[in-house]
Length: 250
Image (tube, rainbow, N blue to C red; front, side, top):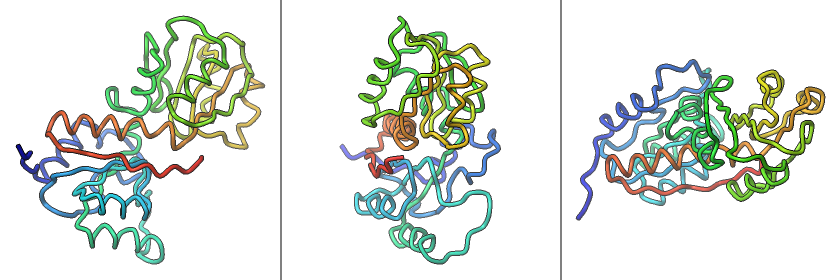
């Protein structure tokens, strides 16, 4: 039995409401960034709206591409060079582009941090920082065991800063770029903080604040949300989907 198409405008309204898009002040232009076909039969999801991602989504037959990082970040960009090619590729294919940045980081069900916290079996989970979470592991484990577990979840070799205890239990996490929250994590009494990528200006913070930091990859820590959201779309609307994997190594 063929699943009937979902009207684009209905699906966009549902996404805006479900993700609480309007509740976040964000540099990203969250929501529908490029308007394409009116009916949605197939969905593609990805972390970044690169030209390669857009072309692969179009080739897959997707009517809607949902990404975490979009094409517009707080200021108008001339439609020249690579930016023009990205937009043109989507328009030529009739591909809709929907973007969810901070709303997808923070969502309590399909958010990057919520899904990662669940995968780590964190308990007593509560908000931390702008979009992150904190909680406790069911039983203490060594820092290396935690890093190994993250590597299995993400496929990314983690960079580990052992600034805190060798045995860990109280864990905070902020997907993507959260290294600036290391001092806050230490003040909150956490022994370990997980985020995506290190930044040079924060390199020494974990050691000087006495907290472990595990950097599991900006890209890899932000694959969880779009895939969970796609599963939600399939469960709600019956829309088939695929994840377009274009890793950055960062």
